[in-house]
Structures are given as structure tokens and as C-alpha cells.
Length: 115
Image 1 (cartoon, rainbow, N blue to C red):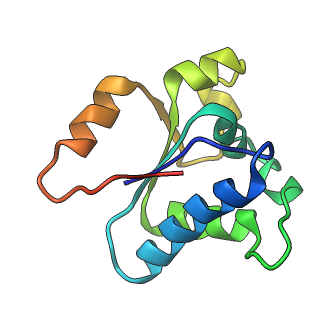
Image 2: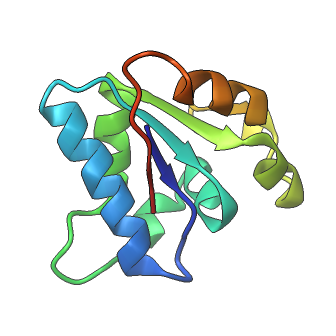
């Protein structure tokens, strides 16, 4: 599980989380990427393509690879604070709350990283 809490406000920390999640997926690891805080915006179509960081893989590509082989979730409270509804997010991304997060973290093989 990788939890990204930063967005365009902290681009380096944000990109690190997406890079770790995409690298894990590419290595065959089961990945659940959680977008919280300002990172919640990247669940909205077009937002990841508007992000850039020198010497880093495009965020849109990283998100696409995680979504293709893993799970992506937006924190329900974070989405609500930004008026992001289920119909507003990229197909395949879900909005879920703390109980779902805790259930995933407590599963047997889960390790969590927070960025």
C-alpha cells in the first residue's frame, strides 16, 4: 500500500509515491495506491497530465500503470472537501473511507508507505 498525501504543492514528494507504486506494480507486487489530501486531485481526468517534475517519469504514465495492474483509491473525506464525486474520477478509481483503508492495512501481506 502506498499513500500519497502531497500534490502539486510538494511535487517531489508526490512523484516519489507514484514512482514507488508504479515500480512495485512493474515488479509484480500487488499495489493499492491511496490518494489523500492534495493528491486526491490526480484522480480527476486531466489533472495528472498537468503535473511535471524535472527528471521524473510523467505522473499520468505512473498512474496509468498502477491503475492497470493495481488498485487506486481516493480518500472519501479528501474527495468531499474538494467536491470530487464518484462520477468525477477516472474510470477504475474508487472513493472509499478510513474503514476500507484500515482493512487493507491490516490484511496479512500489506506493508504501507506514506509520501
